Amino acid sequence: MPFHTVYITGLVRDERGQKMSKSKGNVVDPLSVMDDHRRRRPALHDGRDGVARHGHSPLEGRMTGYRQFINKIWNASRFLLMNIGDLPARPALPPVQDLPLIHRWILSGVSRLAIDVNDALTTYRFDQAADRLYHFFWHEFADWYIEFAKVDLQQTGPVRDAAVAVLVEVHDRLMRLLHRSSVHHGGDLAEAAEAGRRGAGR
Image (cartoon, rainbow, N blue to C red):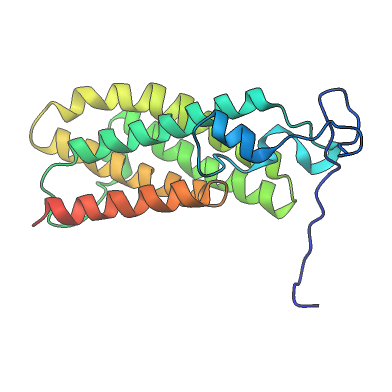
């Protein structure tokens, strides 16, 4: 057998809890769903809604939420690219003890997130890993941290430099974690951010 570990997904069910079957006519056409949402790629790995142990009930409405999440990631990444300025190289993080509370908070949070995601993946709880990533990126990083960081980014000198360094560091770590659940988007955004840093330095 070519693989060390093989994971078998839960039973795919419809919204009434019935096994999906072409003969029952309760299957979902993924191409139709993607066309409805004008998508070419799945947004987030389908583990976020509990496929690991209890089966999976695919609802077309979920695609709207996933699309909005990917838009949130793109917007946050675009904000980073617009605000990193001329960087000859990736900025080094200042000593953590010298950073303001908001920067220490997000760095601590993304470190905890990495531990939680790795633990969830190790135990095959893909739903928990995806859920943690979803809520951390949307609420803690995009809704809170970026809004607070905007104030420091409008400053000059060490205050702005620290904000840029932390923003780049946290965004990079999030893209690496998201790459496991949203391969195409995570990889594309990571490459775009890296290209933007290189381009800004020329």
